[in-house]
Length: 276
Image 1: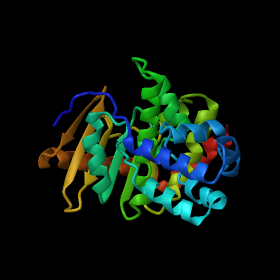
Image 2: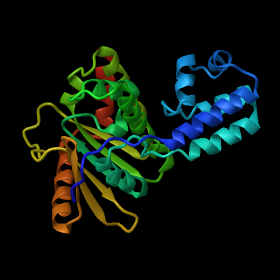
Image 3: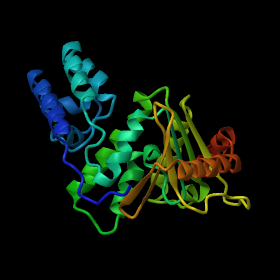
């Protein structure tokens, strides 16, 4: 099944969250300039959250409790839990995003870009800064918000198994510059430490490589059906035909056997980080 390309949606839930944050701050008789350093964010960052232009970090709620007290934190926490991951997602991604939220297993192989679920914010911004054709700043901001929001899956689905196979060339490329690469490597190591996440790097030299068909995603549903997903050039295809999905699963299993183990991957990531 294909999908058309359309503009990302604007988030009413983010605007609502921002309004709640602003109301709680004002109820505490604090200006943005007073509130921001107390929750350990910049004034600009707080302003953008209140405007609904930045997805709030999960640390904001406990930090707000330190400043405004437990009742305010409970209200803000409820608003945070109401946020949607689909804000800013183009329609051709939303079908897959909905499947991600219900999956018991998620598999990904990427040879063009580090998968969105593993991208730290500096890497995400570097991706959208280089997107062709260039998009308006407000639209880019919504897309950054959307990608960060989707990463809440790791916390919200602690029993879901996440497996990623990533080409080493994507890490060696230095995409976005040294600081972006440092942030990426640190982030990958942080995610690798999760009990339900496995990251495997496909080494630069691998004669027996089964990824010639390109990047792919696979999701196992709650009733243990598998669905495939392919995305490229602002289009996507969901693959439900059992025979085609079976072929994708076979290829993915072969790729995992050809890639470095999670333990060897961690060692390589640490070596790469230490070399920067």
